[in-house]
Length: 305
Image (cartoon, rainbow, N blue to C red; front, side, top):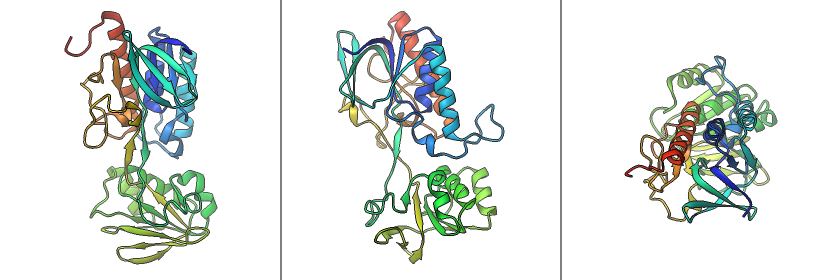
């Protein structure tokens, strides 16, 4: 056994960091596990609508602040992804990718989600050679060139706006008839003269040999120097190995207090069924999940008890 804790938080995205901060402030011995501090928010150049930051804040700035706050409150951290969760004698054993095992009285699952892939020819072969999920990382490499973005939600709109600061032109491909992004992002995208929106358009193939040279779409071939894919997310729940029932999106069902069907296990953020896709909501759910576990450790009551 590599350590016993009151609460283990599986995941170090914003939901997990918020859960770790809340738990530690409540005086619970807390461990947060995750291979990548900040999760998907690390690639977001600007998070809007987060209280306290009227001009927005980059995900790669917000998440380290949250981690430092949680650590200052007493939370411990280990840089390893969770690979297993199993009950033992009224506690939970949490296994990690570095072959360690931790024991906890309660667990918050905040393992987040990974960006979906298109699943088209050329995508995997050209990953890192023009196919990307991080506009803030790769936009400077495409200065003066044409870049494509696939998707119609907030992430696609945000990344198109980030790319537009560097590249000559951005083409936003969306299979639907209207963008799903919140109005503020839709307005910003439509007002940028170097962003072209192509609705009712699907990308069928990524073209190029050593690097991306274009895409084949439902409307024909388009020349591009880079392609950024934001078509949704796949929740990270494989480690549960069927221990919890999942909804049709692969996410974990909870009650309004973030409690799952497993006694002493809560879920928060992008891995939770009903998550609404906002950073501020992830932070709130993480705090709520930690509070639910704290109450359980105090009175030993859980859902239907």
